[in-house]
Length: 400
Image: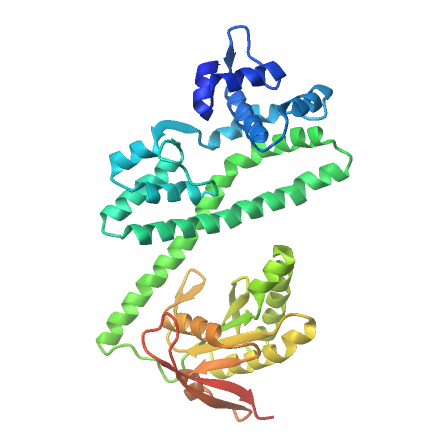
């Protein structure tokens, strides 16, 4: 598609003179009809951004002329997946939707960019988030709550984007540079890989999000069913209830901040291996890894307690941080390889309350545990985040 110099300047929100300066340096080239391509839009946007950040365009042009660097990869189709600027400003959209500029600005900020002014133009891909905001606020959700939720989205998607970039650099770019590729050769080679990978990224990420959403929504339905049964007096725990155990590593967040994601991932892997070995010895079933911990299912609460005490003592001897454990016994709902229900939520909350080297259990666990080697020291009723009523907890210990 051919683009005039005026249209090119409009697309990236700059003056026509800025486009002319890029042409003069030879960093972008117009054909005889003074038209440009879609790749030139991205090249111009990137190069002017470099200049704004303090990089002289003349120096960039020099290394390009030498063949040390090339921006030809901007011509690849995968750049089309990123949104350009629309003709509408934030002031226009605020007037049309009735949403405040402050709320609309959150859309831009949650993507990692600076807060826009009312006269800044809205990116085309921002309209999807704006449409969701409009429906959410119109349904009765406060603007403050909607803004907070959108920021949570931005923070977590940012972690995914940063992890992707780090993975790409370490696993694709660095091996090429270490093999003797120049920066220009590396960019050209990785561009070919990107052309294959890029179309698969969005579907893969969306499918993962859908699976996570199904899991979360299913948990909500299960809780509603359990609440209804409880109100009807039909929610029975049984004489020999199963148990759910959450085992978490202490100081995982600090470890990630101090040593990076790679060190944290290694801790998670080593912990998972140790948990699998220890749980299988007691007929336990590791359900899933949670980054800083593991969720394990046991048919018998006594076996869950024995496992937890063993892990508490053994994990630190392998060089891993100490653990803290929460165990709850009661009804569990099994769906698609996972467990749901109040018992699961309670175990997770107990684990969060426990301190390093501490194994805490609920009343159902102590009542269902008949093991002469185990004892429980009552802590008392504790208010746990996300749990409606105070829960009586005890700390587990061995007698021998």
